[in-house]
Image (tube, rainbow, N blue to C red; front, side, top):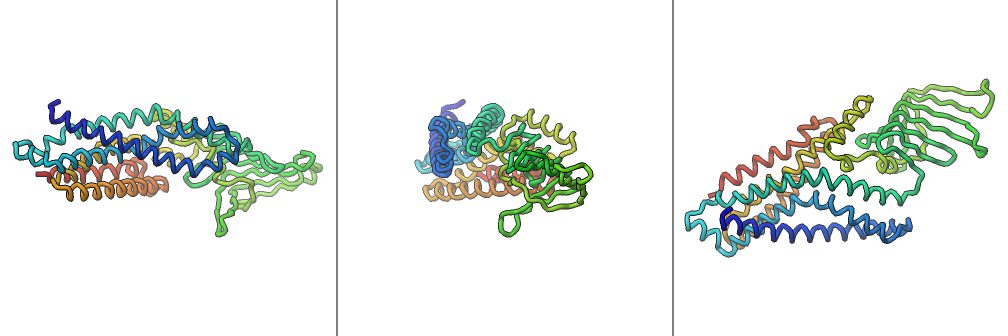
Length: 363
């Protein structure tokens, strides 16, 4: 590595670390004030609260690293332009594209690091953070995470074989009701169920292919058994309760998520959300390389302080547009509008083309 490349790399990492640290502090501060009241109401110990926010740091780092890479590139080249170093290098016969070599290497290295970091450290920390967060809700719900959710209600026990958070659908639902003497009174079995929030937001569950057995505490001849194609049922369950127990993609490394998808699909359940997240695990880390090249293309277009300010504005706008478009495409994938692979990668493809054009047009 030449002296010039070492200089550019040193400038980049200086501002990259500065931006990363500042954003982590801001993120944790906002998250702290948003959650502290609920933690105190649940009477969690200070050590558990502290551990929760410490376990959140790896996830925060993985989410904001691309933005830190972008601002690091803009800061490094912007400072060089402000000090007229870019002009001096051009006057000395140094090609602008030669200055991009360390940024390309750093961007690729950051992408690989983010992928490994997201597959090793982040899933472990997310599991521990979610476990502490679940302590706020008590023990009304027990589950094996991905299947066999058991919910204790008011004189009722509900079992759900599988919950799909993408469309708020439950599969293999069984509801058992008891009287005050804990004698079995009613049992409901349904193939699937879907939550309808309604206009008031209270909502209700609609069960499909539903078998209802009434008066089970009486003689067998008095039992009432009715089958419904569709039945509205008041359940002591909200989707927010089930979201906490549904297995999250962020809790599983790459290969574990792949095996989980195969397992869910082999059992006949819809795993579209998890398949989209599976491809997103490979797509998102490479935004570090793409956004580094794009940021360099913006920063090297000018050599004045005004150019640096404009580059920062375009850079922040680019990050916002990318994240919005990326999230939108994932939503289309969750809704089966786009194939999972396309939904995860199309943002990278389009922005990689834009980054290539920005670098190609440099003089």
